[in-house]
Image 1 (cartoon, rainbow, N blue to C red):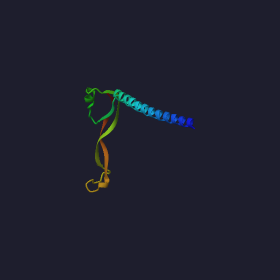
Image 2: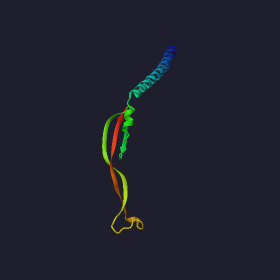
Image 3: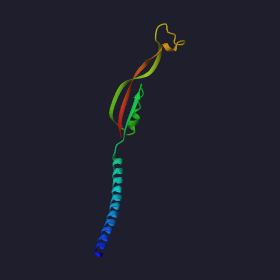
Image 4: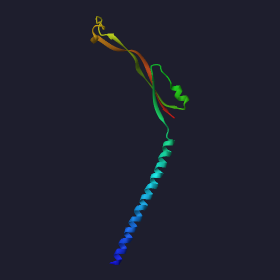
Length: 116
């Protein structure tokens, strides 16, 4: 009977010691993980997409600031709209239902993907 009590005490002590050791190891792993995340985030490059349309162009400000162009794309864009009568004898002042909105000026929109 005495032998069984000693055996149970040894098992309880072993469980207690092993659980404390596991907690210490997990804390060390967390610290190492945080350190690796900080190193990765500082080495990552920043990316940004900007758009200029209808004659605007401010890309030189970004290039002077150290940004590099990764990709450049352009597409047509409507810059202004105008209202016109739907028919010849339509009075837009009196009858709002005969007013049609059409594109007035069409320009180019430039899209830049930048990296720093």
